[in-house]
Length: 404
Image 1 (cartoon, one colour):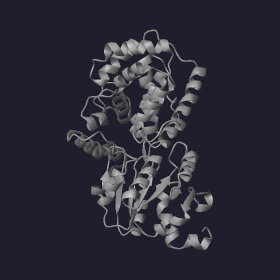
Image 2 (tube, one colour):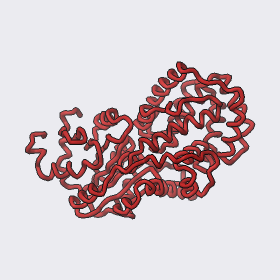
Image 3 (cartoon, rainbow, N blue to C red):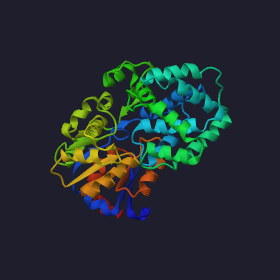
Image 4 (cartoon, helix red, strand yellow):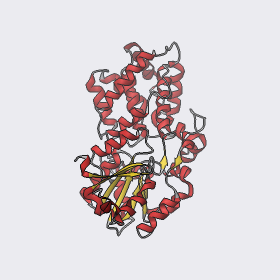
């Protein structure tokens, strides 16, 4: 598919693209499901900054080596997400850390593995991290600027080896590179990941303390913060969606038939969106909390471990079920995982169409080009452009303008 396969529109907010073979489908949309981060909420100064801040914080704590807080750049975050397997930001921190730790000088890495061997018995992830940080700080050296730049370039190249299996593809790519022996790798991986989740993983624990801030962290997880006591990065998140957009869409699709299929947590979304969430069908809201609950239930019943997070279409299908009956559901996302989730959902139910939004991503041009390459149905700057696009199609303005 080429650009000739799209009708190109110049909106006030930027360029939009509509696949010519999907124009008639826009007239049939009567349910809309939204991803949250990057679609309803601008996360560029919250989640994205929490990824880079957490990676630098943990790396220094484990090694005593200081890297800039913005070492994990917007481009690197984008490249991780483009692989389709990093909808969970913890996994981007994990992948970045394991690459950096595996590519340290052998002497420095030996110091780390020796420390880990002594401290692996500590179960609490916060205490495990604090213990190693105190020991690692002794005699540590700074990394030179030139070495940092080389590492950054190598990390960018590394992301091209990753795929939709996410963290598992990180492990495969690093071990197959020969940069580190399997025994040392497993020791480091198990130390930082522990038993997983905020209660066992250093990565998850520190990311959530930094992202939430102490008050919200305790509210969400019921655990006292032990590592980070500054302001939560979440407070830098801002709503993208506005009430006028939802009211306008409601008039176009026979009422507020809106759902959410998100990889973020309900309380995090509520913290930023406030009572805007009340405009979405409560039964059609699927957040990470719901997904993890079902994953845990499967494990308790003895099923093999399965990930229901995007690009798995579970959240999209579950949300849409509460919006029945509908002719065609539009899913609005900002990442490759979102586009892939729709593609997979269509295998089970063909009544889905995808709109990729790019304005509130760290690298808008690259995201837009990625959506075009993936042949997405609709590509537009912002969720707030959707009512205008639907009106153009339903009013016949696109056909009359000759864009088709």
